[in-house]
Amino acid sequence: MQKQFLNLKLSQKLSPQQIQLMKLIQLPTQAFEQRLLEEMNENPALEAGKEEEYEKDEFENEDYDDYDDAESERIESEDINIDDYLSNDDTPDYKTQINNYGEDDDERESPFAAPISFHQDLINQLNTFILNDSEREIAEFLVGSIDDMGYIRRTISDIVDDLAFTQGIYTDENRVQKMLFVIHELEPSGVGARDLQECLLLQLKHKTPTESVAMAMDIIEHHFDAFTKKHYDKLLQKYAVSNDQLKKAVYEIERLNPKPGGSFTGNNKVTENIVPDFAIRIIDGALELTLNGRNAPSLHISKDYQEMLQTYKESRDKSNSQKEAVQFIKQKLDSAKWFIDAIRQRQETLFVTMNAIMHFQEEFFLDGDETKMKPMILKDIADRVGLDISTISRVANSKYVETPYGTKLIKEFFSEAMKNEQGEDVSTLEIKKILQNVIEEEDKHKPLPDDQLAEILKEKGYPIARRTIAKYREQLDIPVARMRKKM
Image (cartoon, rainbow, N blue to C red; front, side, top):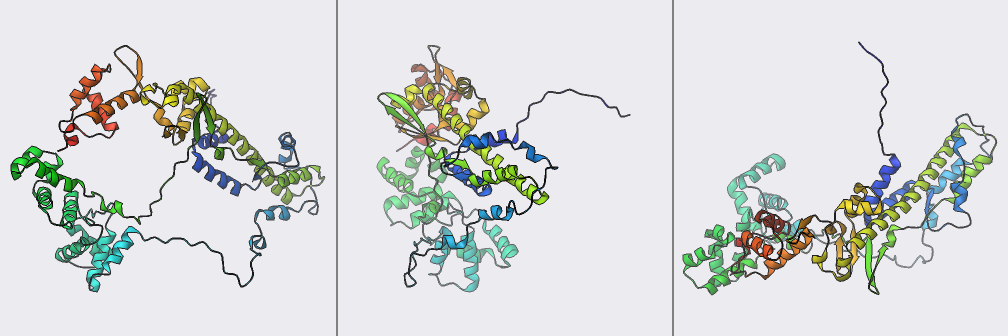
């Protein structure tokens, strides 16, 4: 049995404009510039530069809500030529032609480098080997199986199957292994290895034979596990050599490249340059914050589009086709006005948030001592500026600030608090910095295990459990004591 009833419910929903504003706030400077270009390409009513010859308030006070009425009066087509307005979006070809060169002048073109990729360089090296068609197909397939680090992460049997199913090449493991030996002759040495042990061995084989190199090869080939675990005492006993002799062999291994593919100079990987969103300067002993000017573009609403709307307002008769076109104009004007307001609000939100962070961490920004970093969570800043925690998070993520001590990710200034022996709140960043300093100053012949590190920090006034030391050490990307041991 169906029943109808009323249910009163209070809910909160974000408008599309609020959602887009949150997305704008989250964007760092470079991504914001790209978003700005996209908006200007999509909306012809939005123009760059400063406004001239008319007042902003004229548009802001314009009342054109009554033009939404579908029963509006008609105007004749000769009053407004909509085609002329809408055709101005594309620039004619003749305006982009260069006319200040003679017919006999050479074309002024800037040359661009065409660097060779890692895999193409390996293919070019294969051309120096005498191979028949079948062998070349297998060798090129092996090159294509090499990852960016220089490894082939497949077994020989799997490669045989891949050749059959994907290339229609039917072969056996012996022929593939033969071609793999050819790949191992390519540069950089170690390329085409199937694991780290084989990679190191290949590089040692390309070295000039010496006593140290021979011992290094034997260590990698027969005692690789003992070497990776740094059981040097076992190696000294096994080879019956002096400490200096083993140290020279270990030195030969440490000089090898575990990622031969990464050393290729022609990899052409895009290097992302960090563009600071803020800059902090110390002027006369006081901090000064500035927002990157690229976050504050000069934008205004198209005068032509405003005049188009004004012409529509003053007309007496309105046709349906022109009514639809003017609705399009009105929509673009609304969108342009909102986008300009959103950018202004984004600028204000970014500045007040970073300004609060700067003053919260004033001691650090004045002298750069990371041990003076205060515990700070998102709520601390949200309470100071009167914004939501999610907004603060969007500002802090993916944005950088240029300081006298280097460019830093903003979210790195946030940390939890812990109590020291005096009952004072100290930042976990401060504790990590002290832990890092202790490890750097330790005797590398006898590195300190986590329980001893915990005792040292306790003596310094930071009572921390051993498991917490292990967690902080991993966050600092510092290996366990055994792996920090040196000869």
